[in-house]
Image 1 (cartoon, rainbow, N blue to C red):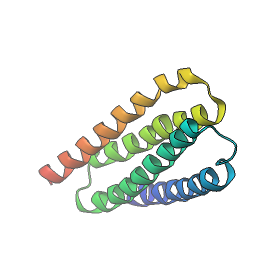
Image 2: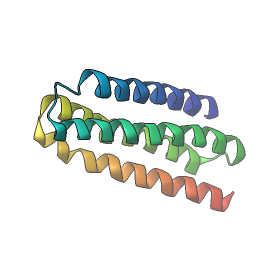
Image 3: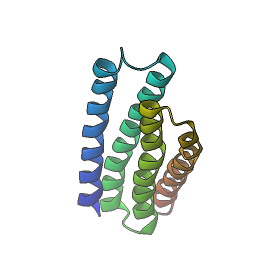
Image 4: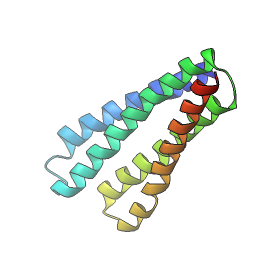
Length: 122
């Protein structure tokens, strides 16, 4: 799982950097300020959790087991739900997508709890 989560984390970081650049240079004059801030939040949290996936890859070699694996999948799910919903909301203005965002936040929190559990029991 260490290679899987490292690769996913690296790809997610790549997308986060590209999204951040796109937001700063391609959307600055095209989106209202509120939606641009939402887009930037999505990119920022994607980067945080891309780095978290790299940490999961390292943790998987030190404390292999289901809590670390669960943390990795929860970080990925959180990125898709949290950042993904915010990207789409900011680009389209579809407000109901904001109802999905907290589910991603819960996945992020659960992922951090799993990672802490793995370290504590390891």
